[in-house]
Image 1 (cartoon, rainbow, N blue to C red):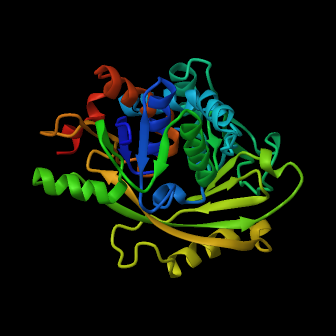
Image 2 (cartoon, one colour):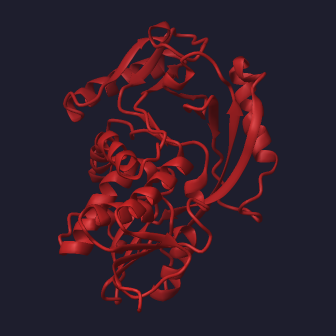
Length: 351
C-alpha cells in the first residue's frame, strides 16, 4: 500500500522545523519532518541554550514578538514534554548582568522603567544588589546587577529530541526521506538561505559561524542559577551539572564545523574574568553556522513563486526563544491561510 501523503512536510530538523511540525501535528495535521543528517545536527545542536529578551527600549515588532514567544515558552515546552515524554531541559531561571560603572547603572535604571511599561508586569527587569541574586560568585565594582525574570534556559539537543518524540507521539514521522505532501516548509538553515538566494537571484542572508563550549561545573542548586551575561560572555547553567559558554560570531571562516583558537580565546577570557571557572573541565568544544537573514529578523512566509511552499529561516542567535510563537503563526499560515506574521519577518523584508 502506498504511503499516505502528509498534510505538511518540513525539510530541516532544527528547532524551527520541529517546532512548526509539532504545532501542526497538535492541530491534527499529518506531519513529516525530513532531514538526512538527523535531528539537531546543524546550528540547533549547539550547547548554549540561552533564551533571553532584547533590551527593553526602542520597542519594535521584533521585540514584541520575542516577548510574546518567551512568555509562551514555559507552556509550550511543558506541552512538548507531556506529549512526547522527553524533558527538553527548559527552566525560566532569569538572567544576571553585572553593572561595571556608574554609566551602566544609569542606563540600566532607565531600562528598568521601560521594562515596567513594556512588559506590563508579566516579567521584571530590575537593578539590585549583586548579593541579592543567588548564584554566580561575582565581584562587581558597583555592587549592582540587572536581574530579569524573563530569561530562561533550554538544552538545545534535548529540546529538539523532545519535539521529535512529541511529533512521533502525535502520529507524525521524523526521518531522512521525503514524500508527497500538500504543503512544504523549508527550515534548512544557512544552506536554505543560499537556496532561496539562488532561486530569487539576489542575496537574502548568510551564515555566521559560532563556537561555544560545555564545561563540567557541578554543585548544589547550580541548575537553578540564572544565566550570566558579563564582559561579553554568556554562561548558562544546565540541569545536568554542566555550564555552557558562548559564543563567537564569525562572518569569515573556512571550516564551518571545526573549532580553532577563537574558542580557546573565549575560554581564556572567561577564566580570567571569572576565576571560579579555572577548575571547570571542558567537556565539549562546538562549532556551527547559524542562519542570519538580511533583515536580522526571522524570515517567515510563503516562498515567492512556489504555491504551497513556505520558508522558516533566519533564527540566528534567537531561534529557540522565537520558536514557540513562530510555530504558532506558521501553523496558522500553513493550515488556515491566516497570516499573522509581522511585516518585518516576511521574506520580502530580506530582499
